[in-house]
Length: 230
Image (cartoon, rainbow, N blue to C red; front, side):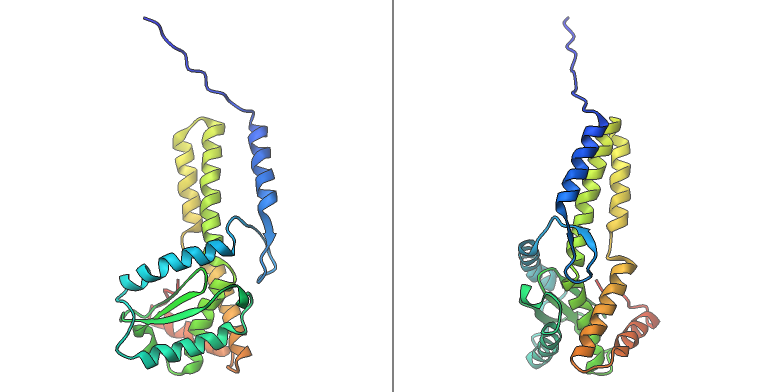
Protein backbone atom coordinates (compact mmCIF):
# COMPACT_ATOMS: atom_id res chain seq x y z
CA UNK A 1 0.00 0.00 0.00
CA UNK A 2 1.51 3.24 -1.12
CA UNK A 3 0.68 6.32 0.92
CA UNK A 4 0.83 9.53 -0.99
CA UNK A 5 1.85 12.61 0.85
CA UNK A 6 0.11 15.74 -0.36
CA UNK A 7 2.33 18.76 0.01
CA UNK A 8 0.53 22.09 0.27
CA UNK A 9 2.47 25.15 -0.75
CA UNK A 10 2.55 27.65 2.09
CA UNK A 11 3.51 31.19 1.29
CA UNK A 12 5.13 33.32 3.96
CA UNK A 13 2.53 35.38 5.77
CA UNK A 14 4.35 38.60 4.92
CA UNK A 15 3.95 37.86 1.19
CA UNK A 16 0.21 37.42 1.47
CA UNK A 17 -0.24 40.48 3.62
CA UNK A 18 1.94 42.57 1.30
CA UNK A 19 -0.09 41.46 -1.73
CA UNK A 20 -3.34 42.26 0.05
CA UNK A 21 -2.06 45.69 1.12
CA UNK A 22 -0.95 46.46 -2.42
CA UNK A 23 -4.35 45.52 -3.83
CA UNK A 24 -6.11 47.71 -1.29
CA UNK A 25 -3.81 50.66 -1.99
CA UNK A 26 -4.49 50.45 -5.73
CA UNK A 27 -8.26 50.34 -5.16
CA UNK A 28 -8.42 53.27 -2.73
CA UNK A 29 -10.09 56.45 -3.93
CA UNK A 30 -11.84 59.55 -2.62
CA UNK A 31 -15.63 59.47 -2.30
CA UNK A 32 -16.87 62.29 -4.58
CA UNK A 33 -19.61 63.26 -2.12
CA UNK A 34 -18.13 62.84 1.35
CA UNK A 35 -14.51 63.58 0.46
CA UNK A 36 -13.41 60.57 2.53
CA UNK A 37 -10.93 58.00 1.28
CA UNK A 38 -12.48 54.60 0.72
CA UNK A 39 -11.86 51.26 -0.91
CA UNK A 40 -13.24 51.40 -4.45
CA UNK A 41 -13.99 48.08 -6.09
CA UNK A 42 -17.29 48.80 -7.82
CA UNK A 43 -17.78 51.77 -10.14
CA UNK A 44 -20.76 53.62 -11.58
CA UNK A 45 -21.34 50.92 -14.21
CA UNK A 46 -21.89 48.42 -11.38
CA UNK A 47 -24.33 50.81 -9.68
CA UNK A 48 -26.37 51.22 -12.85
CA UNK A 49 -26.40 47.53 -13.68
CA UNK A 50 -27.25 46.21 -10.23
CA UNK A 51 -29.88 48.86 -9.55
CA UNK A 52 -31.54 48.18 -12.90
CA UNK A 53 -31.58 44.44 -12.35
CA UNK A 54 -32.98 44.63 -8.83
CA UNK A 55 -35.57 47.37 -9.33
CA UNK A 56 -38.44 45.43 -10.91
CA UNK A 57 -38.14 42.37 -8.60
CA UNK A 58 -37.96 44.62 -5.52
CA UNK A 59 -41.08 46.52 -6.55
CA UNK A 60 -42.97 43.34 -7.36
CA UNK A 61 -42.08 41.78 -4.00
CA UNK A 62 -43.68 44.74 -2.23
CA UNK A 63 -47.03 44.85 -3.96
CA UNK A 64 -46.01 46.41 -7.24
CA UNK A 65 -46.54 50.01 -8.26
CA UNK A 66 -49.56 51.91 -6.96
CA UNK A 67 -51.25 52.23 -10.36
CA UNK A 68 -54.65 53.26 -8.95
CA UNK A 69 -53.43 56.84 -8.72
CA UNK A 70 -50.87 57.61 -11.44
CA UNK A 71 -51.08 61.30 -10.52
CA UNK A 72 -49.60 60.48 -7.12
CA UNK A 73 -46.64 58.72 -8.70
CA UNK A 74 -46.12 61.66 -11.05
CA UNK A 75 -46.16 64.02 -8.06
CA UNK A 76 -43.57 61.96 -6.16
CA UNK A 77 -41.44 61.75 -9.30
CA UNK A 78 -41.59 65.53 -9.68
CA UNK A 79 -40.49 66.19 -6.09
CA UNK A 80 -37.74 63.58 -6.43
CA UNK A 81 -36.44 65.05 -9.67
CA UNK A 82 -36.27 68.52 -8.13
CA UNK A 83 -34.10 67.11 -5.35
CA UNK A 84 -31.95 65.03 -7.68
CA UNK A 85 -31.29 68.10 -9.85
CA UNK A 86 -29.33 69.58 -6.93
CA UNK A 87 -27.71 66.35 -5.75
CA UNK A 88 -24.04 65.59 -5.98
CA UNK A 89 -23.24 63.09 -8.75
CA UNK A 90 -26.56 64.08 -10.36
CA UNK A 91 -25.18 63.49 -13.86
CA UNK A 92 -24.13 59.93 -13.07
CA UNK A 93 -27.64 58.47 -12.90
CA UNK A 94 -31.17 58.69 -14.23
CA UNK A 95 -33.10 58.97 -10.98
CA UNK A 96 -36.46 57.20 -10.94
CA UNK A 97 -39.07 57.42 -8.17
CA UNK A 98 -42.08 55.16 -7.73
CA UNK A 99 -44.92 54.60 -5.26
CA UNK A 100 -45.54 51.01 -4.18
CA UNK A 101 -48.88 49.51 -3.20
CA UNK A 102 -47.66 48.52 0.26
CA UNK A 103 -49.19 49.69 3.54
CA UNK A 104 -45.87 49.37 5.41
CA UNK A 105 -44.40 52.83 6.12
CA UNK A 106 -41.08 52.45 4.36
CA UNK A 107 -38.86 53.76 1.58
CA UNK A 108 -35.73 52.40 -0.03
CA UNK A 109 -33.07 53.19 -2.61
CA UNK A 110 -31.02 51.03 -4.93
CA UNK A 111 -27.68 51.93 -6.46
CA UNK A 112 -28.04 53.80 -9.71
CA UNK A 113 -30.84 56.10 -8.55
CA UNK A 114 -33.82 53.73 -8.30
CA UNK A 115 -35.96 54.88 -5.37
CA UNK A 116 -39.34 53.72 -4.07
CA UNK A 117 -41.69 54.87 -1.33
CA UNK A 118 -44.64 52.87 0.00
CA UNK A 119 -48.12 54.41 0.05
CA UNK A 120 -48.20 53.46 3.75
CA UNK A 121 -45.44 55.99 4.40
CA UNK A 122 -47.08 58.71 2.33
CA UNK A 123 -50.20 58.58 4.51
CA UNK A 124 -48.06 59.40 7.57
CA UNK A 125 -46.49 62.53 6.09
CA UNK A 126 -47.94 65.96 6.77
CA UNK A 127 -46.71 68.05 3.86
CA UNK A 128 -44.51 68.24 0.78
CA UNK A 129 -41.47 69.22 2.84
CA UNK A 130 -41.65 65.91 4.71
CA UNK A 131 -42.03 63.99 1.44
CA UNK A 132 -38.97 65.81 0.13
CA UNK A 133 -37.13 64.88 3.33
CA UNK A 134 -37.86 61.17 2.79
CA UNK A 135 -36.82 61.30 -0.85
CA UNK A 136 -33.79 63.46 -0.08
CA UNK A 137 -32.63 60.91 2.48
CA UNK A 138 -32.83 58.17 -0.15
CA UNK A 139 -31.09 60.31 -2.75
CA UNK A 140 -28.36 60.79 -0.17
CA UNK A 141 -27.91 57.03 0.11
CA UNK A 142 -27.47 56.82 -3.66
CA UNK A 143 -25.11 59.74 -4.13
CA UNK A 144 -22.87 58.78 -1.19
CA UNK A 145 -22.48 55.27 -2.64
CA UNK A 146 -23.80 53.57 0.48
CA UNK A 147 -24.89 50.38 -1.30
CA UNK A 148 -21.51 50.26 -3.05
CA UNK A 149 -19.64 50.76 0.20
CA UNK A 150 -21.75 48.07 1.83
CA UNK A 151 -21.01 45.61 -0.96
CA UNK A 152 -17.32 46.53 -0.87
CA UNK A 153 -17.31 45.77 2.85
CA UNK A 154 -18.83 42.37 2.20
CA UNK A 155 -16.23 41.63 -0.46
CA UNK A 156 -13.37 42.80 1.76
CA UNK A 157 -14.73 40.69 4.63
CA UNK A 158 -14.69 37.64 2.37
CA UNK A 159 -11.12 38.31 1.27
CA UNK A 160 -10.07 38.85 4.88
CA UNK A 161 -11.63 35.56 5.94
CA UNK A 162 -9.82 33.77 3.11
CA UNK A 163 -6.48 35.26 4.19
CA UNK A 164 -7.10 34.21 7.80
CA UNK A 165 -7.79 30.68 6.61
CA UNK A 166 -4.62 30.60 4.51
CA UNK A 167 -2.40 32.00 7.23
CA UNK A 168 -3.72 29.78 10.00
CA UNK A 169 -4.75 26.73 8.02
CA UNK A 170 -8.01 26.82 9.98
CA UNK A 171 -11.26 26.78 8.06
CA UNK A 172 -13.21 27.29 11.29
CA UNK A 173 -11.30 30.45 12.10
CA UNK A 174 -11.86 31.73 8.59
CA UNK A 175 -15.61 31.12 8.96
CA UNK A 176 -15.66 33.06 12.22
CA UNK A 177 -13.84 35.95 10.57
CA UNK A 178 -16.33 35.86 7.70
CA UNK A 179 -19.30 35.97 10.06
CA UNK A 180 -17.77 38.86 11.96
CA UNK A 181 -17.24 40.76 8.73
CA UNK A 182 -20.82 40.15 7.62
CA UNK A 183 -22.09 41.43 10.96
CA UNK A 184 -20.13 44.65 10.50
CA UNK A 185 -21.57 45.40 7.06
CA UNK A 186 -25.15 44.18 7.56
CA UNK A 187 -27.49 47.13 7.09
CA UNK A 188 -26.38 50.67 6.40
CA UNK A 189 -25.59 51.42 10.01
CA UNK A 190 -25.99 54.60 12.01
CA UNK A 191 -23.13 56.48 10.33
CA UNK A 192 -24.55 56.03 6.84
CA UNK A 193 -28.07 56.88 8.00
CA UNK A 194 -26.84 60.11 9.55
CA UNK A 195 -24.85 60.87 6.42
CA UNK A 196 -27.98 60.37 4.30
CA UNK A 197 -29.91 62.67 6.67
CA UNK A 198 -27.28 65.40 6.30
CA UNK A 199 -27.19 65.13 2.52
CA UNK A 200 -30.99 65.02 2.34
CA UNK A 201 -31.23 68.16 4.47
CA UNK A 202 -28.76 69.88 2.14
CA UNK A 203 -30.84 68.93 -0.91
CA UNK A 204 -34.00 70.09 0.88
CA UNK A 205 -32.49 73.50 1.44
CA UNK A 206 -31.50 73.80 -2.19
CA UNK A 207 -35.12 73.43 -3.38
CA UNK A 208 -36.50 75.88 -0.85
CA UNK A 209 -37.53 73.73 2.13
CA UNK A 210 -36.31 74.12 5.68
CA UNK A 211 -33.76 71.41 6.56
CA UNK A 212 -35.64 70.91 9.84
CA UNK A 213 -38.20 68.90 7.85
CA UNK A 214 -35.69 66.05 7.94
CA UNK A 215 -35.74 66.16 11.75
CA UNK A 216 -39.55 66.11 11.71
CA UNK A 217 -39.62 63.00 9.53
CA UNK A 218 -37.03 61.14 11.61
CA UNK A 219 -38.92 62.02 14.78
CA UNK A 220 -42.22 60.89 13.24
CA UNK A 221 -40.86 57.53 12.18
CA UNK A 222 -39.00 56.91 15.41
CA UNK A 223 -42.01 57.81 17.57
CA UNK A 224 -44.13 55.28 15.68
CA UNK A 225 -41.32 52.70 15.55
CA UNK A 226 -41.26 52.86 11.80
CA UNK A 227 -37.67 53.81 11.11
CA UNK A 228 -36.82 51.19 8.54
CA UNK A 229 -35.38 53.37 5.80
CA UNK A 230 -33.04 51.13 3.76
